[in-house]
Length: 127
Length: 131
Image (tube, rainbow over all chains, first blue to last red; front, side, top):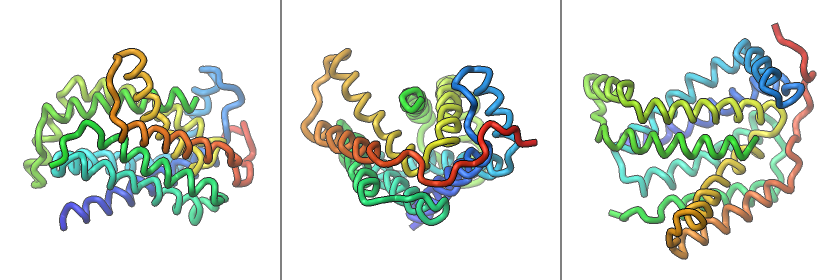
């Protein structure tokens, strides 16, 4: 039970953090060019954005929750379960960020999710 | 940029996994968490992993400033396919059919997502400094 609560919390913080980050970066606007100077300027502007500071703690919490999950449960459970964050993230992108997620993108996300699970499970002794 | 993001994320994750496996299982109590936190902070492999993840973060932030989140996220999984190919080409590792099926699914998935418009939300005023 504690594992599933932790997993739910992990999925919420991962998606919440990344959505806040996307929101902040979109508000910051892209760098003029991909030169170190322009990218540094962009980073400077980005850290002044409030959403960045909402995203970072959430991502940090999600990261620490993943470490705890990995130390509690076999990786063969944690990896497929955390691949769900792709699906939760896409739902967040559609309904919170109002991105246009068409059928092709959904199909891509689901294939990536299954593929990532198959690849990650390889060479791991299943208990 | 997405490629740099993928490489940094994978190297960082591998280092973290290595670092955490030397620490062992974390007890979910106040003292257990505190103890694990102390060990994590003192581990150099974890710090190297964090350095790579910082590189990933910078690439990630830059990409997200113009592309959709639902576009960037699946593209990140391309790293699994890349790692497998590198392992076969340089390390001459044998790869199981299950893993190949996974790689093919990821490639098809990333191609499908890649065919969609990278950006579907309205463009914010670009290059304007925000105070």
